[in-house]
Amino acid sequence: MRANNQNFNEEQHTFITVEFDLEENNTPVDFALNHLKWDLMKLRSKKNEIEHGYLLVFSRDGANKLDFLRGSKQLAPKKIR
Image: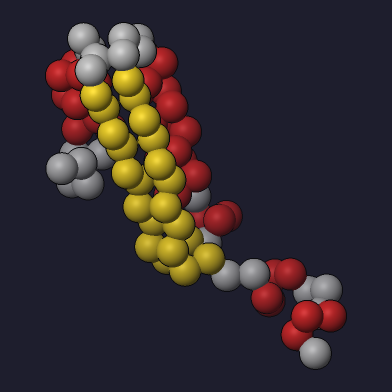
């Protein structure tokens, strides 16, 4: 039975992963970008074997919203929309 198999390297496979990130109010840009970097590392890590990773970032009511968006595009220029 597959449920009793203890060989997790054979059994574990992540097809889709979604990370949610909410930056609101006046979160400092450096803090918000650091959070984004950690989420991107989790999604891009070969160790995690993620086939399709998505990062949904929401930013609202923040005085630093535009600075965060500019920094985000530098971290993942092809992926941020």
